[in-house]
Image 1 (cartoon, rainbow, N blue to C red):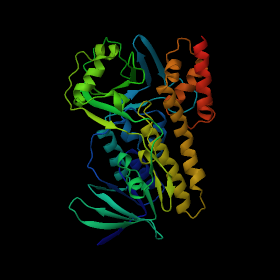
Image 2 (spheres, rainbow, N blue to C red):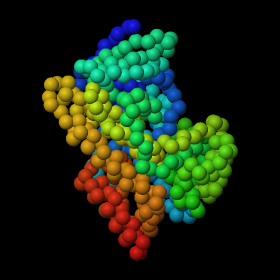
Image 3 (cartoon, rainbow, N blue to C red):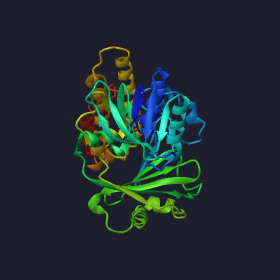
Image 4 (cartoon, rainbow, N blue to C red):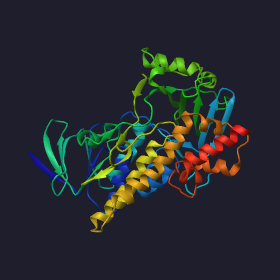
Length: 409
């Protein structure tokens, strides 16, 4: 069997893998990415958060992204029947980027991967990791190529950036059940044909709530080419056996604002669904490896946190690994796992408060205090690691107190 070598091996060339590769190349490390698919390929998670721009810039990929012509984004809009609210991410508590993009993930992921390759990372498309050996002095992965040839790849360290594929959690038995309820998402892309005078701000993601079933919500993410991503999310038992496209259109018609906006839309792409997407793991790191992005933990799509968490995990992991490869003593628990989970737990508090409607009541409250609005806006913009923000440091407590105050008004 052929035996190849690299310095750092990355499973997956999606956002976390590509950004990790860029960061590693800028630090002078050799990188090989093993990617099962070919790019571009369809994926959801299309509305970025401004915090993401910091890591794209750090990885040396900012110009690539800016010049790709994606839809500019400056905030989020919310709607429930006749109630409306919006957050301008430029008006936020935390310093940093206040704008970003809404992207079709096929082209976006390819932009990042191509940038990593331009910087010297080797990407092996249509190669699949079939086994991993972490018992020796160095990690060894067994790979099957597109032609069916099996070979081994040895490195100094291994990152799993395989996203929903969750390669190492499966191979190493690291998966644990998520504490979040089992939910389902049905989604597609459409030619939205929203009239220019319809009052739809294409520079914001639109999150709509079902007028009666408040735990059912919709996303509408406009792209720069006149198309949009549309999806509905609810508990698994709220959906039936009808085909995905039929169910999605039926649910959209139950949301008055979406029915009006999309009355002329062209539904030209088959719908898809994901069930039970929330996931968790026993550990984020181990002997010779660390998990990145959705291979660690995926919460929920409601606040578009997935790509931001992916980028943050890549940034923290590469920073820790670079010190380790330089011969320094590092603490993966403190320097990686605990730091990453600070933001994940803040997002988790917001997700839980969304589904039990506390956060919905806060968002749609008619008289929001400007400073509190700036704090919430910062978390929604992805700044979930800024512990100077009370809605990060004490997210659950502050959300509960604010909801109680809103109820008294």
